[in-house]
Image 1 (cartoon, one colour):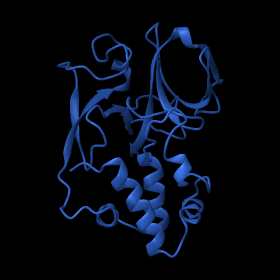
Image 2 (image 1 turned 90 degrees about the vertical axis):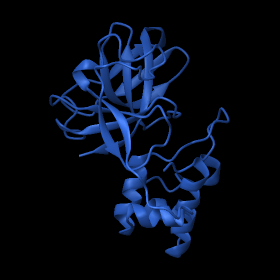
Image 3 (image 1 turned 60 degrees about the vertical axis):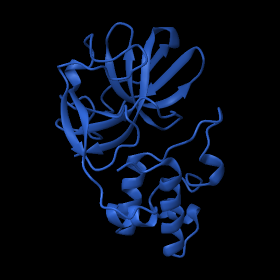
Length: 211
């Protein structure tokens, strides 16, 4: 099944109500910015819907000892979810040609594998499997990052970036303008990165990590 944008936020509001909390208090209890669940934050500056990241939702569920099925019930879902198969690609392959279009959407390549995922937010969600140690301690070898090329990105998000020379990396977004992209490395042993936007092919938001 698919949880819609409105159902996800309905689930957050109903969970807060069930616990006797405001949305701001629920966000704070979950270790998030107290304003993260404000209604004003649910629409981006460009008018696009601001989806709750699966990583943030996971923090909420852990902090409140709520199962995903319980959350779906609060969101108004009556049926048990069916697993969805989403494309999976090894991180080392992501820099090669033929797996993504120029906008960062996965293409129908025979090189893709697949994994089961309990809910699909949009049809273009895919997974990248981490290899190596350059993203520790945040992500470790074998972790699978669930990525959405359709989600809006903003400061503080973890994103997958592909440069025009084929380099693919996962970083935290520090700042993005029409001309400049500033990124923070997840591993403190690696330097932060700064790019001209003209050198970036695409960037996509990391929604969730399966560890």
